Length: 280
Ligand SMILES: NC(=O)c1ccc[n+]([C@@H]2O[C@H](COP(=O)([O-])OP(=O)(O)OC[C@H]3O[C@@H](n4cnc5c(N)ncnc54)[C@H](OP(=O)(O)O)[C@@H]3O)[C@@H](O)[C@H]2O)c1
Image 1: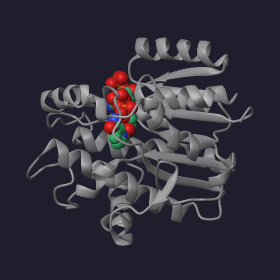
Image 2 (image 1 turned 90 degrees about the vertical axis):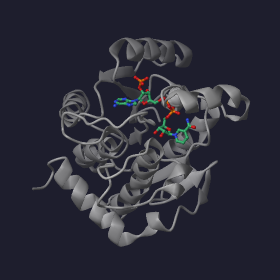
Image 3 (image 1 turned 120 degrees about the vertical axis):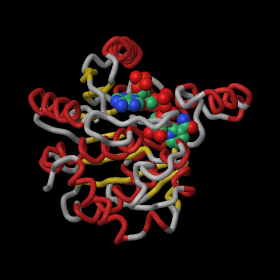
Image 4 (image 1 turned 45 degrees about the vertical axis):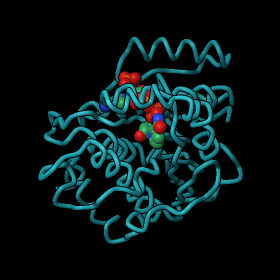
């Protein structure tokens, strides 16, 4: 991985942080995208120290904001002429319904449109750098999502769990549609479930879940375990030509029937393009 350039979003804690560390250990250049400069700087310097790799850099921005996503992608393009691995990981379970300055429900904005817009803004660079890989951190929670294009942002009724599940289903619909669009480019895109991981995820998700995760913390896996499949998809020769698949524990598994709906994949893509202004 010595001449490779990798991006990991949400890289200051949890699964993203371990992924950035493991990629840095391979000798790759690693760019961490974090929304808080202090937390990002502190994680980046710790990763440089632990990996012995000085080529670990930070880009700062909030991935729920389309302007900030454009700024981060622009800054990356100014600094780097290539991109070989993009790990879309930043996201979470947001306790209450919030709307971003772009007018989008925040879970959908961060967990889905964040992946969608950031990837699309870097797609030409990935193609130019091929072979290249995109890894989307999804979740098995996608299985309980109710796909209703009239309530994608909880406009009619909102539950934090449905909003989260739907955003993780959107990660899969996006992955499968993108894989089709990337056919013949030598850029692969796969998604994964990391397992139930003891990270900040539950602490940030509201009191009930945060409390339950304290009680049942013993049943959760470590972020190191959570990052294993991410790093596998990002680096292993075993999966260099695999694309448009869903993984858990480094094994290909089936995702929900809804996620395989080709018409829904295309519909979400077109809607997302309009929502982020890539198409009128
Ligand atoms: N933990 C689990 O059990 C579990 C299970 C299935 C899937 N996942 C998925 O795994 C991924 C990583 O989660 P994790 O468990 O590592 O959680 P985590 O410890 O809470 O880490 C989430 C990361 O995303 C960042 N982030 C959140 N919103 C952001 C935004 N608007 N802009 C930029 N960065 C943002 C966070 O930044 P801050 O530190 O500044 O908040 C943090 O760096 C997520 O996509 C999640 O859906 C987790």
